[in-house]
Length: 111
Length: 114
Image (cartoon, rainbow over all chains, first blue to last red; front, side, top):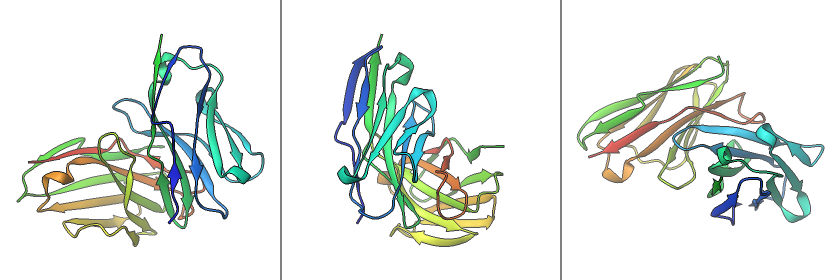
């Protein structure tokens, strides 16, 4: 069965620090990849998505992600985080009619 | 309208009650989904409806019964639930089955079973 792994369960950063959250998926075929964010008490919002083409994908709020097929990875990055980025971040892979989520990474940003 | 609306936002029910969760979208999406999310866990897929037909049931207990009356509405009927069913129930929708554009999620119904 296809799976998504997020190895960083809890990340704590100071404002202006750089962020990289890891995401690895198990499926070797064509995949559609997503990053979602869930702010405290709010619904899941799509940050960015990858289907094909340029492996460097830019999303909202200054986030970007790089698809590296050889490493089965789709890591999320942001050069300089803000306190308002405090949230839960989920990587997800879509295949065979299902969107499967990783376990999530809780990001806390302190001023 | 680019939203998925879920009602109610909060629900407390006894183990013998029957209740329903409602989800509505007016984006013309033809695929709709129910997910269950426990605290500090990722959303887990329960059901997929495609063009108003149930296409995926992730081995969900029969005490959860989905219904798709039309392309804009998705219901989840609840009966004889257990306390461990307490969770955030999320509805989502997408263009067609492919989910190529990602899913749009509702804010969820926080369910407590007592």
